[in-house]
Length: 98
Image (tube, rainbow, N blue to C red; front, side):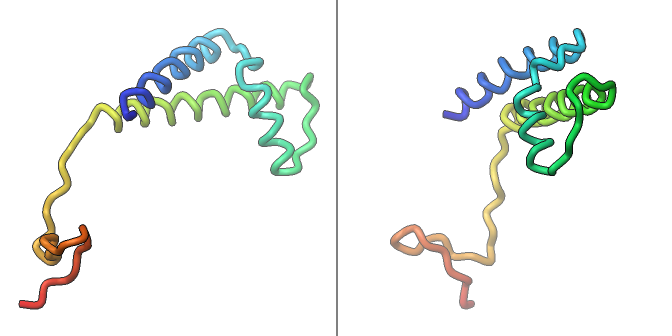
C-alpha cells in the first residue's frame, strides 16, 4: 500500500511541477475555489491576485508532495523503548514495574 501512495504522489508531483513551470493555474482551480470558499474570501478569478494565490497554492502542493516522497523513501526502524514491556499477550504494552 505504501508503494501505491508513493507512486500516486510522484504522478501528481510531476503534473504539479509542470503546471507550476507553465504557470497553468487551471491545474489547481477547483481546489483553490474550495479554499477561497472555505475561508470566505471573495476573489475575482480574472484578477492578478487570484493568479498569485493559485501559484502559491501550487508551490505549497509541490513542497508537500516532495515531503511525502522523501518520507516514503526514508524507511527507518523505531527504537525499542526500555520503559515499556511489549511482551504482554494481546499485543498491549504496559510500563515496566522493576
